[in-house]
Image (cartoon, rainbow, N blue to C red; front, side, top):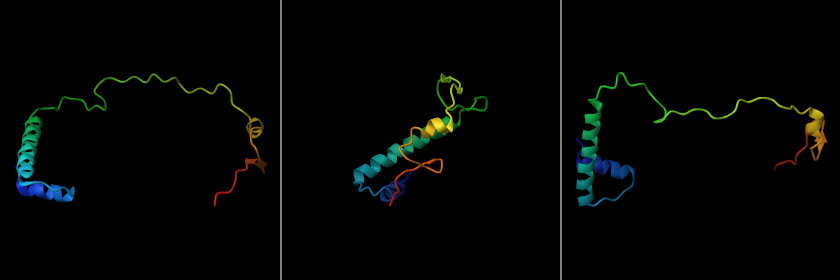
Length: 93
């Protein structure tokens, strides 16, 4: 069960200033959430397969196929400057 001290500790970690009314409210709300989680843990999920998405997902992407492969000389023809067979770029300081 969640106590007011637990809420104060979390508020301190989150650097939140809470009023006494907020502390009481959050204590009740967090307690209710944990009760709900306990209730869900009682459900037998041993036959449920793990999933990564709620709905089925089919990859609609096409398969990668090389249609045309450029040669090095064709690629280097686009270079503004070339040095020893490589692109020459400005030095970064």
